[in-house]
Length: 247
Image 1 (cartoon, rainbow, N blue to C red):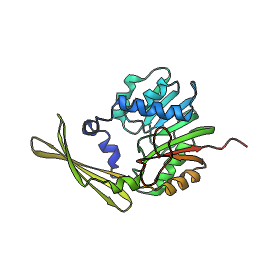
Image 2: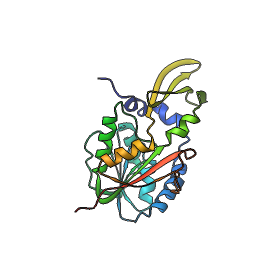
Image 3: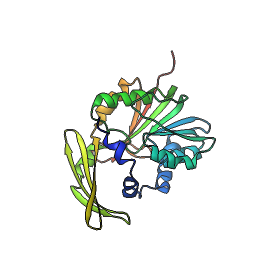
Image 4: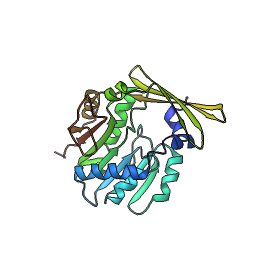
């Protein structure tokens, strides 16, 4: 069985090197703005699903939420464990499997940490599993790219050079996915090639899938201050969806 691209790429030091500009300070400002707009309450429980190295989960905990971060990458979770405390824990887990966690008030899926799978059945399964982590009345906050704007602004190729490597990057849209090919070179010699594939979901597609997961979409926003979503201009597409109260 072939290992999915995300299970390989996200576990490499090159992934973290290429995206090192996405640092804790950037995350802190965005998550603070988001949580203020959401009206979270200290002491509530939260899940950061696909938490990576835990930079968002750490901010959620600092804002008063008892937070669990879950990610498929064992390397990322090992790194995140350095930040763990009595109100912040990390676990290796897969959103395509039942998520073993005490039900939470908030489940966050941030910065397009979704859309990686080959089939929409798997995407639906992942959303079902995230919905099942919520207490009745709990909310799923899904922060996804606005694929229409991203595709309109797609840069076909560019090169990024760091102290570790040179990354030659090409991008294209194919069969409903935005595909990024990344060729790594050191000292002028190509050493690795990786590919990112992210599903270019529309607002309507994600809304339907969230509803199929048993959630009610309360609103869709275009930024972390929860401003109005504009299909033509917003770079983000942030869904707030609620699990129904028990009857």
